[in-house]
Amino acid sequence: MPRLVDQGVTRLTWVRGEDGIANPEAPTVAELTGQGATDLTCLMVTTYEVRPDASETTNERAVCETANVDTPTVQNYMGRFELFRQWDPDTGEWSASEDPLALFDFGDVGWFVRRTGLPKDTPYAAGQQVEVYKFMVDTPQPQSGTGSGYVKVTVPLLQQGTFTVRAVVDDAS
Image 1 (cartoon, rainbow, N blue to C red):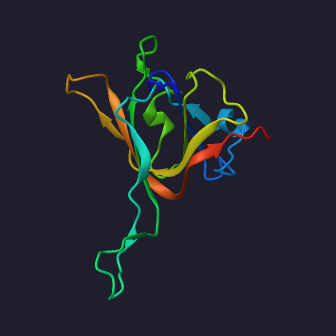
Image 2 (image 1 turned 135 degrees about the vertical axis):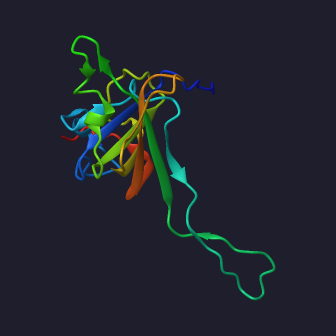
């Protein structure tokens, strides 16, 4: 089976709201493309990080065991967005619809969805596998004035107890 280069084959979506996705195991096409959904694919810097993290463990062994025993208990995941700010030279202002400082506020809750494998412009469809992570936004952190790249915003994300790396898109509306 051929390998796949991770370039142009990832789609990143933010779905706003505590109830933006009703079932994280089966987000619907309507949830992923509706009014509460924002395509972050072309806003995201490649240094973003969203992924499962090491689980919490309990470390107890019986007297008779001669090696330590680590048992996973609570799963963890983590996230941090690195997003380009979008400047509108016609108005001389930041884009009201695509600027991360307009998209994310402290305390916002939402769902990060990542699809890998299909070309980024392929529409969501039933049967596609996606990752789904529920986050709360911490204070967005603007960056500028360093002369080392485009103007960006870092958005720290706080885990909200739900994630899966094997969700399947549903066509239910």
